[in-house]
Length: 166
Image (cartoon, rainbow, N blue to C red; front, side, top):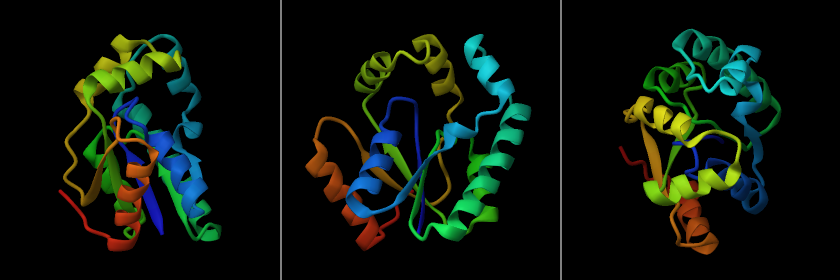
């Protein structure tokens, strides 16, 4: 099973990936590990990524995920997947992948994000403006203040019932 956990910064993608690893035995890969040098420099300069940067990044990420999935039966990847064309590109290469959109109330998401200290809030607000509503088949989970037990129940429902939302 290949799961792609996506959503806005601070929504809890890494948290969900870690839960899938710790509670359900998935191999967890944080997609941002593949950020190119150009992207890392843009982050330092607080410049948003452009599509030419993303094209290179997603080509590399899809290659990495394809390689990992050959040896990892249960793989979860966390990445923002800000644009629909990159979600579709991944599905073209890995049609068995299932997307999980992690959503969080804006105030809570921003509060969580500010605790991380790795990006400027204004930078993140710029990313939010670029985030395209997903049209690919996907599951949705809310990661607000329900707690770990409720989130685990939501993940169990996805893993075992496979009900897809749009």
